[in-house]
Each structure stands twice: as C-alpha cells, then as structure tokens.
Length: 376
Image 1: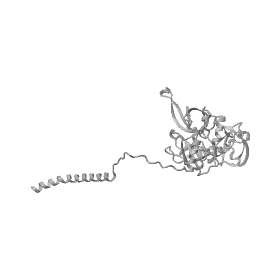
Image 2: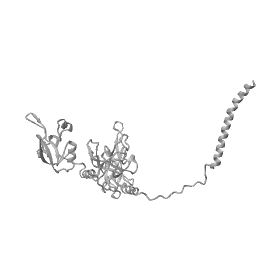
Image 3: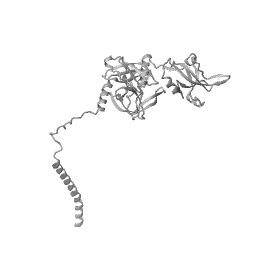
Image 4: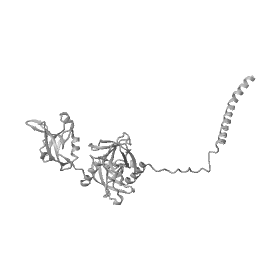
C-alpha cells in the first residue's frame, strides 16, 4: 500500500521539479546576460560621425552633368481621351496614357512617338518647371511612329535637345535614356548599344528599319523620350521594349536620330510625311514568290503618273494572254528583292528626285529613268 502511494506522489512531483529547474536556468542566463552586456538602451546615444566622401568617379560626374544638361529638354505627355456615358450622354475625359517627349526647337515644337498621342482627344505637355501646356498636333507619321506637337510656352521655358549622330554609333558604346516611366518625374537609366540595324513594326504594320537596340531600362512611360550618347546628344527616340509583362527586360528599341531629323522637318513643313513613289500598284511578295520572280512585279501603272510617263508597263492582256508587267530589280545600282526593300530605297530620295530603275521586261534587263512623285 505504501509503495503504491509513494509512486503516485513521485509521478506528481517530477514535472514540478523539472519546470522549476527550467525557470531557474532561464533566470540565471538572463541575469548573467544583463550583468555581462549591461542595459539594452543608452540615454546618451548619439548619431555616428559622418565620414567625408571622396571625389566622385569621372563617369559619375559625367552622368550627373549629362542629366542636368539634358533633362530640361525632356517633357511629360498626358494623353486625354474623351469618353461618353450611357447612351452617349455625359461626355467626360479620362487619362488614357502617358509618355515622354523632347523639345525640338524654341518655337515650342515637341517630338514624341505617334503611339503616345494616338486616339487622344486632348494632349497635355508638362515641362521641367511643372507648368502644363495644351498641345496641338502639327503632324504625324504612323509608319515611323513619330509625331510633332506644338505648345505655346514662352521661349525662356524651352530648352531644345542637342541633336547627335546615329550613323556613327558602335555596338558597346554607352547610352542613356531619360523619360517619365510610370508617370514619375524625370528618370535616367544607362546601358550600352546592344545592336544596330534592328527592325520593329509600327502600329500601322509597316516595318521601321535601322532601329537601335539597347539594354538601358526602358519602361512604360519612357516611350517618346530621348536616347542619348555619352555627350548628352540625341541619338534616338525610345520607342518599344521587348517584354511579355510590359516592364523593362533589358531589350529596348529606339528609332535613330537620322530618321527623326529627316521626318520631323517634313511634318513641320507639311503636317505629314511626303513619300516618294512611282505611281504603280505592286504585286504582293507571296505572289512574286509563287511565280519565281526575283524583284517586285508591277501589276498596274497609274495613268499620268511617274511610271506611266517613264514608259513602265504593268500586267496586261496581249492576244488573249496575260503578260506579266515589268519587274523592278534595282534602284540606282542597289538590288531589290521585295517590296520592303524597294520602299526603303525610294525613301532615301525626295519627291522630284531622278532615279534609275533596273527592270526585267520579257526576261531582259532594261534601265529606265523615273522622276519620283508624291504618293499617299
């Protein structure tokens, strides 16, 4: 009987003794810790002494100077779209997009991407001093994704961008992108020219040639902003990024400044880009491929046009048979393989320029001189 009671008593006491020992051990450790390190707070604590900074590296100074010099030329563009309520009542305006641009001249002209202002009922331009100006469209070229706006800001608020050269660019050279990504204030990113001579498609479906590829971060809102070389000169306009998510993925594209410097004055002079052409209808590339034709097949010659005056022939019926038209195989010594290449070659000239076409007629080469006309 005694043995049984004693066993129950021991079973009850053992856990109590274990907890007591744990409590004593914890108290001892905390006591020793406080004794060893002292109080955790110090009412006399003061800020650390700031170590003087050394001189900035040369490339840092260059970037800072570049940003200070170029950023006043960069503007923030808001695309305001008019929407109507139910049953066409209660029209109201909402922001439908934002982007960047840059001041082209002291007359208040601003260059940006066409897709930045596309479908806008109203466009606003914010300058570096945060003043907001209503913008009017001077002209646009959807095929080049370029547009020129006009604001009535005084000349003292306008700092035109410095125009550089895109023809002498080299892969690997340093570049800078300035813009207003996500609607934020002026932001600068840096990188290099990753590749040259790239192709991208404009919203119109036309191919833009000679595009600059860069790894400088280009985010939504950067579109229309300048791409600069290490001297702060404009070498391109940031136009697109390659990214499934829409954020920068290290592959950005910029239309080269040589194209901007050609298109912008045309838009300012005429409100549109005049395209030199021949006055012909051309066969689709797939048809030429099916027929085994190397070059561009003329389907129809417009009466009274440049091609008709030069004697070019379109596809026609002769004695009940269909006779293919002339095949354009070259322009001024440059071989032509398809329509895109023909368009690129013709765009090197102005309306009224005299060019020499290499034609294939009845399987024989023929040279014909044509004065280029304006086409739609």
